[in-house]
Length: 367
Ligand SMILES: NC(=O)c1ccc[n+]([C@@H]2O[C@H](COP(=O)([O-])OP(=O)(O)OC[C@H]3O[C@@H](n4cnc5c(N)ncnc54)[C@H](O)[C@@H]3O)[C@@H](O)[C@H]2O)c1
Image (cartoon, rainbow, N blue to C red):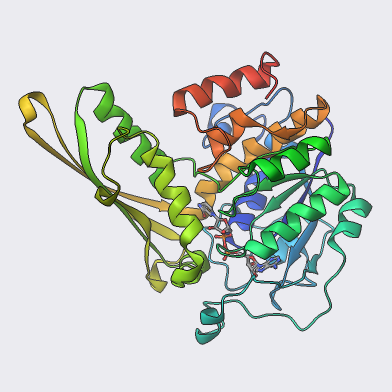
């Protein structure tokens, strides 16, 4: 099978999980059912996870820029769970990107092992690198609130014909104006803000759906999230948080009754607990009424390794982007975006999104 050439912007924990995951499944391929654990789609129309190849990587941290990708993914402040021992050489070095708004000022008040350390280097031309390396898909993993940086990478993709997969909550693929630009340029894109494989969003959505399916009325709900990685540290800056809160809230609100009181839903990243590192804990509560108006209260605590949880979705998104490129499809891919992203252009119920992804893979649905 042809390789899928991937560029990555932001070699943080999510990139680490994704790159380790590709190697993990390359090694377990052909080892029976056990080797497929953790995958939603072992095969996407002939493409396996091992067909993904990283050809370019961009970051701004002094401990990552200039290093081989397989080393940089383990450099501080990354703290991703280790999926495998020892990585094969990729032959790719992390290149210096323009910093733009990638580093929030409050991040500079923390010790280096917890925060970003900006490299003193001239940025490369991302467009040139994308063209030279033949990258087909770019994963945007810059920090929450880096709106300018996210738009910069989207623009580089437009200029180089590369598919943009937006894993963070800058509303680009879900913005009809950007969507039209990618459509006109003939480029398939996926976004925005990756929905983890079994994270707080998909679990919250499933519980809300269950309430309505069983005739219960949800009255109040919250979802509190705490973690100890740089994503959570970055989100301590409330000014950068608006899009993340909107993306996470809308992902649940769209399944609640239309007259649901907006003050009765509270969802967001809630605190940074350094010793938790990449372990994320989500507390979910739903209050509602059942038969005869009798009260029902539901509480759940979810504990997951945050970054591998996003990798499980990205490994499908990348292969679907490649499939769309093979089929000359342009613009936002609505089925895989609704399946793997919190803030897609066209939100769908999860079962419907899942069904449409199967149709897309089988070639029975255009996007
Ligand atoms: N499950 C998940 O972990 C999850 C789910 C949904 C969304 N996301 C989003 O994905 C993004 C990445 O998450 P993460 O945990 O890997 O974050 P991270 O903090 O570990 O990594 C961010 C990386 O971006 C780099 N960076 C900063 N500015 C840059 C620039 N201008 N160009 C290139 N690189 C730059 C940093 O040095 C760092 O290596 C975040 O926005 C996060 O909110 C993550």
